[in-house]
Length: 285
Length: 177
Image (cartoon, rainbow over all chains, first blue to last red; front, side, top):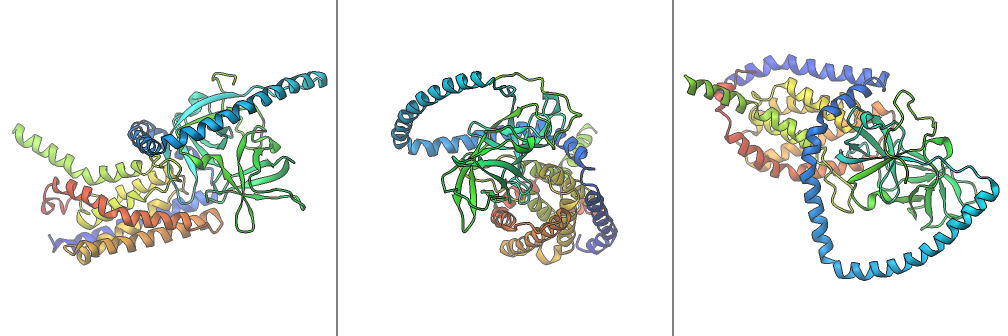
């Protein structure tokens, strides 16, 4: 057995060299035309969707169990805190209802054209590469369900990212924390315009701020809708002050993702792909 | 007759174990593992499989399979195509050529070897992805992934060893490639 090793090693050396050269060629071709492999990538991902969907169920269940155990320990304190919060939210609801009716009246007076209602498609997160280079998740819905490139992805707390790649049965959401994520936002009560830019850390930073800024930690960050890529007014996160720069604690990292809703506002943003059909999903909020 | 044909089917299936386990770990690495309130750091599972089988049964995990599995990892992970294929094949080559150095040694030595392989793999991925994306990427995510990967190798080794024991003896398969 031992004696056979040098022989085998010699025979395999050419295979290894060939495979390394092939990988290099694949990388170089991809570098020359980054969009070339997009179809291949999503076709491969499509193939794994049934397996990943199956495998992810026990993982999600186990993860929920862990969460449940953790919650059980703090159930009393949580209850007290939630009661207080509920009280506060009740008061807020009254305020919101008042404002809503006032808003409706004012809009009527101005003949304001309301925004088109959004269409929603819901999907389950079946993959999270937890990647060192990329912050993205895979969903079990794709072009068949009407997913379009560029659609905003939200969970129950706010914006989490946008659709970057669409396959037949799967799609990839680029999270707001990803290196390539750039989102036009409004910050705080004064609605200061800024760009929220991801850098693969858990907290994106605010860029392109105006010269004199009055942003403080705790300010709410919402999408501004500039550029047409995202609908306006989606909550994104809260401003925190990092070492010398303003960063955003996105709502998304506070908990794990399980279900994601994709919003299609019918906007013609720069990143939309017109070749894919319009969502045929249920409408309305 | 029937017995022996069943035996050969069984043997062939067992010989596929290393490849299938490695493939399974690629998919396993894509699962949403994040605990509530924490950001996901997924270990580089597939590297553990490539290292283990490269060291113990390189006859049962053809380099071409490693290459294809690397491409699958690239597709699922969203990394530039070819990066994982390159890194995994390189690590596999390194390990398969160093079998004598590690075989029969104490586990700590093997683990140390894995740490070196994982470090080289992380460095190579960082350099390749940075070049391909045209910017120097923050290495922290990768550093964390490296630590988690090295820390979890003993756990996976237990699983690999259990699977290894079910395989036919290697002196039969050594020439089959």
